[in-house]
Image (cartoon, rainbow, N blue to C red; front, side, top):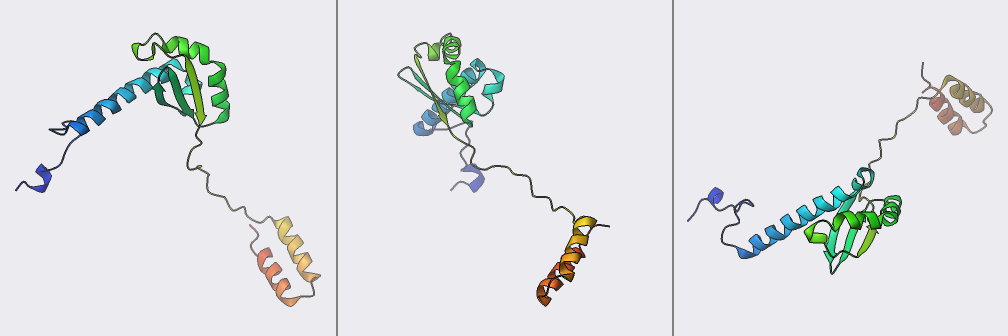
Length: 148
C-alpha cells in the first residue's frame, strides 16, 4: 500500500485520469481566453470584469458595477473588433454584459468619536432639568465620557 503523501494527485501531473486532464485543459483555455478579453478592454474597465463564456458567437462578460457594464456596452463595437483579431473570437458578433456585485462589501470599522466638552456640558445641563432620577444618572454618566 502506498504512503499517504505518495497518493496525492498534483495538478501539474494529472496522471491517468482523463476527466481531470480534460478539466485542466478547459480551465487553461478559459484562462487564456480571459487574458485576451481583458487585454482588449480599456484598463479602467478591465478591473472588476470577468470573462464568462463565448458560445456560438455570443461573448458574455460579468462586471461588478452597472456603470462599468454600461461603458462596456457603449464601447462593444471597438471591443469586439479588437477581439476578432484573435482566432478564438473570430466569429464574435454579440456582446452580453451581466452585473454581478461583489459578495462582501469591505466597510471600514466604525470609529467611535469622543464626546466633546460642549456636548458633555449640554448633557449635564439637561440632566439638571430632568425630573426622572434614573435618566438623570444616565445623562450624567454619559457626560463624564467627555474627552479632556
